[in-house]
Image 1 (cartoon, rainbow over the protein chains, first blue to last red):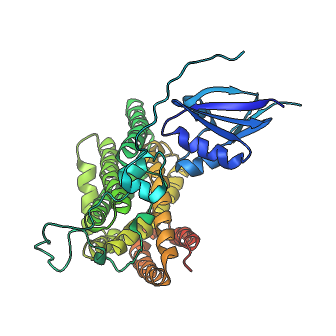
Image 2: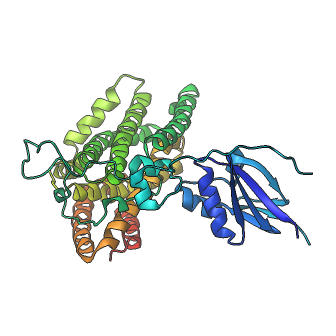
Image 3: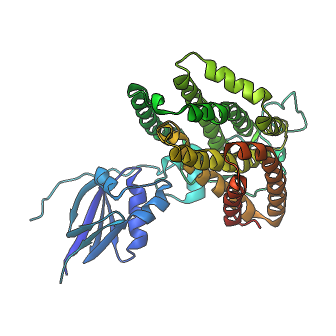
Length: 89
Length: 327
């Protein structure tokens, strides 16, 4: 019903995070705006450390997401391997 | 509540350089892509090397490996100059902090005489090996083909100088800055039985002509074995003997090996996947250098660790090589 969303700064590092999110969440829409990349999906969105590491070519901590994060919307669940956004029905 | 922010969007006239666009399409490129692809000159050289007039300055024929696209060797770490320098600067900060702590707390005084002697005997002479590794990597950077791989070789070569310096500093910490440990380690390198095989192997790599072969011999075979023997097994031995503080001083080398391994394994995998001829040649080279290295390292492994140490190290190398598609 409601969309979960995450918006990242449009920089060199974020591109890999966006690539990873696109791969892990095929239903998500990616919107490019000035200096910002916004990703939206119905009810569920996941940022997975392993996929990001694969795209980036180096070790990555999920908390590093906050360096590039502008905003997000949804119920947040975080652990060492992922950050998930959900809305309960 | 939604906030209306009035924006004026300016689209760039071009998304990236034409050569990058030809490869990847009309979209924004990464810094690594723009700094690496098609950077090296491939045609219209102004002159031939006087010292090798049958080849061009940049020439694919300097190796027996054949690639349809030398830029297939994309670095998984995506190191171009900026990313590389930043990464190493971060690692160096950590290392400097470790060394400062070690010296400030005088952790050297907790090393037993035996441990101290072992570090000078087995660890410090490695600075001479790093010197060879630097030369070998620079050779590849000079005569290799394609910025993707020559760039990575250059970075690898520079890293060796850094690690050689750290090894020297370890010696200087242990001898109170007198330089005696370094002189002693050099004497060991020149005279001691355990090092002569390795020294001869180093010299052999220095006179091998095919830069790809040299790269494999050095960055894959020799590094894999020495890293496992010294920075894993010997490190473990020191820890068990209560000399674990030395670990602070070699952490840089251990972290470095992690990312260098990722790179060279990707290079091998790409080269193997390219053609059967490449695969056959690479298999042959790896077997050859594995044999030589095993023979050269046997006395060192025996004196430093004993038992199955060398076989363990060889097993690790074989696992990596198998993952790349050989044997």
